[in-house]
Length: 251
Image (cartoon, rainbow, N blue to C red; front, side, top):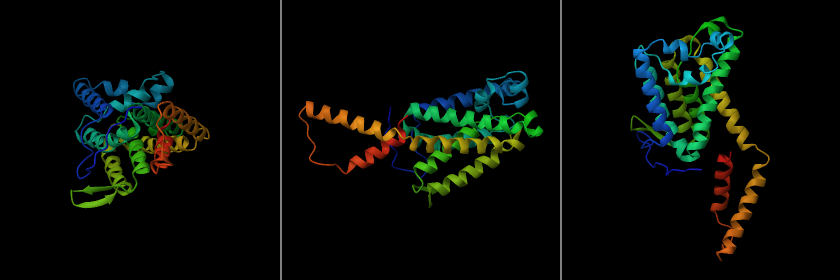
């Protein structure tokens, strides 16, 4: 699994764009510009439960994540800023493969939440939801879980633990995204991204076979060391931290 060096400064952001973050931003901005010229894309690619259920528009739970409100730049700006600030660090920690998988799981999970609730609420059933906010909320949840006490300097002055900073940024993203198409019901997608992200990450940490896989990998590494006459001088203090890190990101 690809890993990237972590940024040591969090005064403004996490540093240079990682591969998946760069690609996601390029795709989102590109689709946004095309949608300005071809507004009908919102109806075809946005998430409309009525179209999914009656016209089998099964692509919409994926494509809606790459559309944003074209009446202004606030919606896409907040989402892309949040993607960069929190997604970059998560991709460095998890690796690109797991990060992309998690991003789509939370985004699609947010869409599924909207589809399920639409069966009981007419306003949701006939509305169109667009935006990466569901996946972004999943990233905010992941960041808060993995770096809860990391200080982030708001306005370059006030250090705030990441768990509280994420809440503030999440509230801003939530309020800003309400102005998009179907904005009055967009909060269902946000909540879906949070819930799906939490359940997914908790499920990974609770896998019963993780300990066995870890022991098997340690055994293989021990054989490799002995084969090349490399011996450790006792249990390293890094063993437990490596184990914790490995169990977090195994998939």
